[in-house]
Image (cartoon, rainbow, N blue to C red):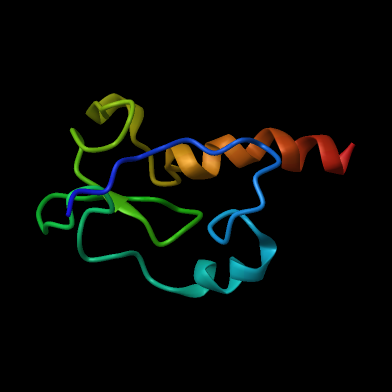
Length: 87
C-alpha cells in the first residue's frame, strides 16, 4: 500500500498533529520511507521520526535543500502555528 504525503491544516487535530504524540520526537527516525515503505537513501526529519526518499517527499528534495536540521513538510506545516502561539 502506497501512502501519499498530504499536508495538514495548521489547526489539524488528527493523531499525527496533536501534542499527545510528542513522545514520537524521542524516537529515532524510521528505517523505511514514510511514503513508499521501502529502504534506501533516506532523508530524516529532525523534528519527527519520518524519513523520505528524495523523490517521495513533496516537494521533491534536492541536495541543496537538505541541511543537518532538515524538517519534513508535515513539521513545516505546523511551524507557523507554533510561532504564532509564542508571540
